[in-house]
Structures are given as structure tokens and as C-alpha cells.
Length: 610
Image 1: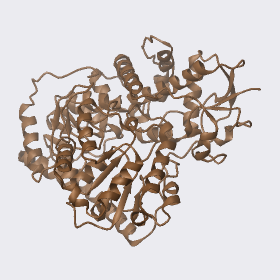
Image 2 (image 1 turned 45 degrees about the horizontal axis):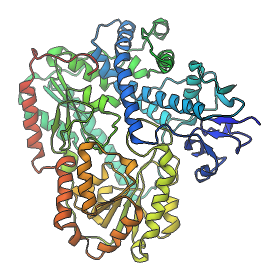
Image 3 (image 1 turned 90 degrees about the horizontal axis):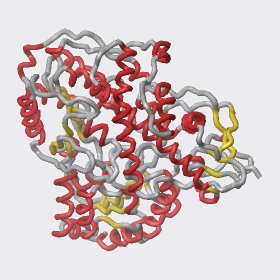
Image 4 (image 1 turned 90 degrees about the vertical axis):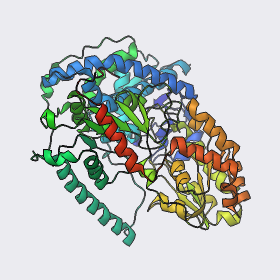
């Protein structure tokens, strides 16, 4: 009997003999009309290379080292393509957010395939359907992120190319097939509605967009020495007022707007002829060297020239715009002209995870990193700058307790997306099962008050049905603000480590956390804070224990929440991972002034990968 390895969940390539097939991962059963996701437990899945958090960390370090070796020849290729002479660090800023992620994804797929070969003991090679062609060059970061984490056909094309270029997967016997049609590149959203509240939110969104356009015009017309980009919690007015308070003389340096900045269309014929002068050290690096050029997004290939004379360019750029279209070019020009770029924390996980995928991107590539309170180093060095989070500082405080139990869930991307100590594709089924165990364990009276907040994108995985199955009267909070949910709840329960625990603690909502330890392997410096949360019975490692705690303190949550051991634990968390201040604007202005005063054109600039 011929056995088949199934790479993805593309239904057009589904095996005829399902039981004889080996499936590379649980994503094969997501958004698949042939089988429901729950059924994957009855089929034969290949083992994961990442069963332990330490394996993720080791792999991340390997990718970091490969990136450092690959960056100089890639920078040379870009300079030759565009006939420019920028530094390696310039191209590091432009490409790191895509290239580091892409290397990680390719390595992950390569390791999975290699592990299948190590485990396969059949007398005949595994049959596998692959495609011999297909467009893999994404338009920009957003398209790449969607395709690599959710699109069956993109991943089929990616793994097909890895198999073709490797020439070392002798245990596979490929059959070439025509590629199915690709997805449209738009992530699925939760069902919405056309309620007055939804329409009002849409009108507010349009108004904010128009205000942002006006602010952008003013910002481009003023020669601010400091530019505030994407920082969570900064309003459009904040981005104008704070730089003005730091640098009032910008009024005297007003300049004419020169129009929109657009990328230059690359000479792709010339690009195809230019070699990537990279010397691989192993088979995986051979594969990378053959594949890389065809995968570079257009927004990296479309060179963006410096839009302003050097004397009018900002000296300090604060923000995390590397994941946008042309912002990497703008930041790179700022730095190359003697300026300074500081990235900023934009969510939970920073300073908390054992394996943190964007450390190379945001810590080491920038000149400094603004945190929500922490300053410790794990495997990446940087100039860490603790400052109050504008987003968290603006949150309201807890109003009188409501009557509902708010249960906050998260999402898991179907395909492995990056080396990060968080939930992996293999954890999806267990994660959903933990939800049902928690809901089942609630007393009937509390269960009747349940409100469930799903993640904004379900990634093709039905997170709601498992909750509704055991709590039919559960209300689904798929619209509106999560902060309003915290403020209106009696007790909040969160089953993951991300941004929401910080938000819940800041608004002082009585909060219970629970997750399996391997789902959130901690940075060593964060482990002691988790121990405090466990000792205070805020954090639990079983859904039944979390439900029992909810039941025990339901009648008077504030008596428990305000006890000394709970208060000390949550205040320690807030101090280091959810720092706020009533005077946060004053502290940011003081910080920006200090950075500008320390920044001179004679200051040595860092070069290279970081």
C-alpha cells in the first residue's frame, strides 16, 4: 500500500485513502470541507520538532546567526539592484521584519519535513503531492503574514519549493500537480452586524482617518526634530502636540509639502540576473540561497529615496513601523543621516517569553527599545527604556462590579508563524478542550452569567461552539471594546498571556488567569512574577482550579482582590509589565528632550546587523 504525506489542507489535494495518509500538521483539518478540525485526532499526524520550549529557543538562535551571515550579501544585492551605496544597517532596518520571519518559517517547514524522514520506517517512499510553480512574492508584510499563517496554497507552494530545492528528502516520492487557486489575502473576521453601534463606530473610524490625514499634512509641513510614529495609545493629536512641546522651534522651520512618497519600480529583469553572493554551510542554507530572491516582497524591492534634505529630517524617530509598507525606508534614511530610531513595545509578551521572535527585529536593530516597565536582558541586548504606556495610562478605573463573568479567549494561527513561546498549532485541540473543561466546572448560577470574548479572528477554528455547548445562554462579546467588558464584569478570566492581563490589572478588574505552563514558557526574569501570581491564586495551571477559585470568591471578589498578597502580586506585575502614570505625557516629553540633547552628529553610529 502506498502511503501519502499530506502537506496542507487544500481540499483539491485531499488523499483518497485518508487513513493511510500521514498529515504534516493539524492545519490540514482547518478550513477544509472534507473533514472538521475535531476529527484530526483520529488521523495520523507527523511529530512536531517543537515539543519543548527550549527547542524553539535553540532554533531561534540558529536563525539569528544565519540572519547575521545572510544580511551583508543581501544588502550588497540591494545596493547593486538600486545602484546606491547604503550601509548594511540601512538594509537591516528595511528588510529585517520580513527576512527574519521568512527564514524562521522556512526553517520550521524544513525541520518538520526532516523529522518526518527520521521517523518514517516504511518500505516504500512516502507519496507527496507538490506543485512545480507558483507566485510566492508577496506584495507587502501584511500579505506575507496572512499567507504564511493561514493560506493552504501558499504553504503548499512554499513546502513544494523546499522539497524541490533540498534534494535530500529521499524518503519522499513527489507527484507534481497543478496548484489550486490561492486565497484572496484577507483574514476572516468574526461575523459582524449593522447595528447603530456598529455604524457609529464606522463613522468614528472615518472621522479619525480624516483627522490623521490632516495631522499627516501638518507633520510633513513641520520640521520636527522628533517624529512619533506607531506607539500604542498615542492619539493623532498626541503625535502632533508632543513633538511640538519638545521642539517649539519647528514653527520656524516650516517647509512646503512635497507630495506623497512612493517606491520606485524595480528592474526585475536586472534583479533576476544579479547573484546573491552567499556561501551556505549546510543543506538548509543551500535551499535558502536558491529560494530567497524570488520571495522578497515588492515593498522591499521598490526602493524609496530620501524624501527631504538632511537638515530637515527628524533626528529622533520613535515607533514600531517596520511592519508597514515604506516606513522601514523612512526610518533607515533617518538613521543613515545621523538620527536615532527607538522602537516601542506594542503589546504583551515583551520581556515575558523565553523565546521571543521579534527580539532580533525590534531590540537589536533599533538604537533603543521603550518598554512598559521592564529593563532586563535575556538573549538580546539593547538600550531598554522603561516608560509609562500611553495606551494603559489612558484606561479608566474599575466602576462598581457588574454581574457577569467575562471569559477572554485568544487565537492560534493554523500554520506555524514564528519562533515564539506561545500556543503552537499542535496546542489548538488541547486549548479548545481546556475551554470546555473550565466552562463545565463552573457552578450553574455563575455559568448563567457567562460572557465570552473571542479573538477578533478565529483563523478558521471554531472557538465559540465549545463554549456554547456547555453554556447555551452564554453571551458572545464579538463587538465593542474589551476594556468595556472588563469594566462591566464582576470577575474576568483570561486563558492566555498577552496584552489583556495587563489591561485587566490596570482597570482593576478582579482577574483569574489560567494556562498550561508549556503554553507560555517564561523569560527567567519574568518567572518570579508568575510565581507571585500563583501564590496569590491569580494564576492557575488547570481549568478546574481556575473555575473553583471563581466560585470561591464570587460573592465578594473585591475582598480577595484587595487582600495584601493579591495586591502585592498584581502591583509587581503592573510596575514591571504594565507601567502607567497620570503624568505620562510629561515623562515622555522629558525622555524625548533628553534623547535629543544626547544625540549629536558626531556620535558614533552602529553599523551592521545589530
